[in-house]
Length: 390
Image (tube, rainbow, N blue to C red; front, side, top):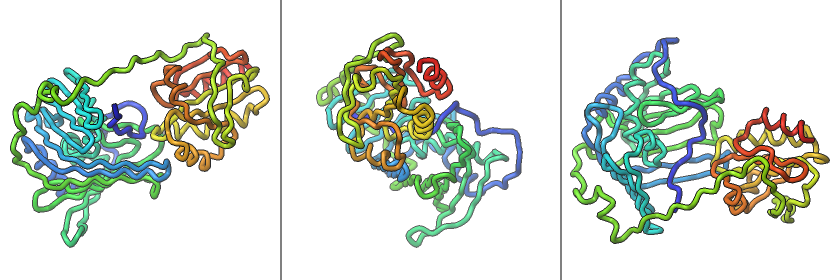
């Protein structure tokens, strides 16, 4: 089944937006009006269009579809039900069950009693009306979050534009933010229709990748008194005639310390020639499994470069193994990073056989090909193990 989730490039734990006052920020009348409008909604139907342009990391994605959402009237942050549909899939939550209908494979996947926070991973929740509703009142009340309001004109119509600056955090559903370890500020420019006090666009950028990363989310055909979808449409049993249960693949556990890893072969990007396990026997080998849409993977590239330069290639070899991206995508990063280590591709089968399920995942081998570490990229721990086994 396709993965319809959008992975945000952010790290760390969820934090609250309510901090002790460190500086005074004047209230935004447009933001206050939007917060009041969204808080009063019982349901909404709208067309959703989102573009993510991550030029620096060779990534562009686009989503277009229709959303119907019902809101919790006791907890202003939550939704009670929703139906969201694109050409590829339909996602439905009826308050008890959440299920996804894949139009390509004609399969469905079902989750009973999903955790509300899990909806943050849904593409349709990214910078959405429901996400804004869950957090905008905290923006209004905060004395520490910078807010700037001005007018703007789009297609000859005047709108109110409110910019909200979040330092080291990004907007998430349920009134929380995802915390960054980097010293980064995320800029959210919310375009508000003054006639309705409803959001029209959300534009996202940051102070680090000023031209390399931006997103645009547009809401059109917004109806705040929509007709409720057919009663039978809320249950997965209604679709069982046309959709079959998605088969769950057996998850292979990650290869453990003590296992031997010798018989493998993958092509190297720079030469096109195969690199085999026998070629690196007698060296300590660090395998770094990565994919392009992975923030941690991008941050680890300079550290990989440092390790290979520091320990040379006589007794140590670093192998960056791309799990499933196209050769031309891997070539983009090879050209950008200019690695002194070997960059391999077509590693999907190998990653699966070794139980690699998240990225980046590293596997460290001693000189005999025995696994001495497998897991997340921990630079200090890895360097200590490399030194000890050389």
